[in-house]
Image (tube, rainbow over the protein chains, first blue to last red):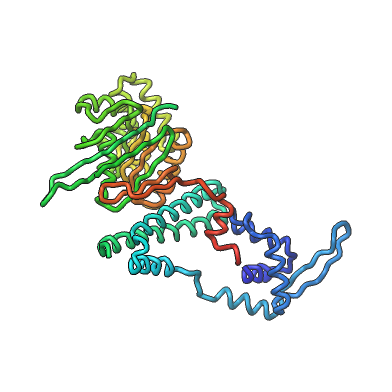
Length: 172
Length: 247
């Protein structure tokens, strides 16, 4: 979130309200879950780190507002972020270890854990599909939901592989 | 309360095998209420297609009872089933099963004609359905001139033309690409929203997730089930899914 806010400021100086609106639009239905204070808190942190600076602008009929702009350190950070290849987690390590531990300790049947987990992921996929249907065709938010849905589908396929592996292994 | 659309108790179906017969369906109880969409998932060979065949009268159970719309049907003869199927059950198959020599609209109107509808009424209803499924312009084409997605839309139109009590779909997207799968998904959602009762057997997670209720089968038995679309509200659920909380 911090890097996205910085990058949005690379276009032109803006105040917190504008940034929040732009982020919410990009996130689509998820934008509603964006905590209003989050953008302002993030901006204060960025200012303390010297990546943005602010200027208070007086307004005639409304309270003064703060306009933020990138510092040169902030601009460098944006360039670093854009070329950074790190990716949010892709391997379901914890669940894998849970199955191994369940089998070792015999505290639970791995196959039953897989069954329950699969139903939970399908429940989440159902919710994403409902949200996707409610999105206008071609929206930015719809594209994000598609990404989330495709990842869930991949996880569900992996759970099928888990089911088969633990079934072949047999009890004990 | 109206009767459940499907009520099955203790269904068993055995196939010959060595050293012992294989129990393809092994003691399944299932109730499907009017207007519900239920999907059945499970690995190949888990018995999900056999279950669907039993419920639609394409195979007979070795044990157990089946009631469709409150009527007991497991003991019906082949002829009685043929009559019942026309009015009560609409099938959608992975391989479409359209008649190659008939045009799209002729395929759709066939079940209506067999059920005693006039030519004119059948033709009109078939065209309405094809229009609604956005393949109306392809009505005069033979199946081999249609894409996979179009063929499956025609098959869905054929399945619903007699306003069946239930549509039974066996891997309906198994032969379709991702885009056509999306179209068929939308179609099932629309049918469900219009009150059509649906039972869908699939191993495609996207298809399964459109249902109101989801069953998992393994070794001929239902091993897990859940209701979908209940519980947390979508906005917070999505924030969790996208990991926005502490971002």
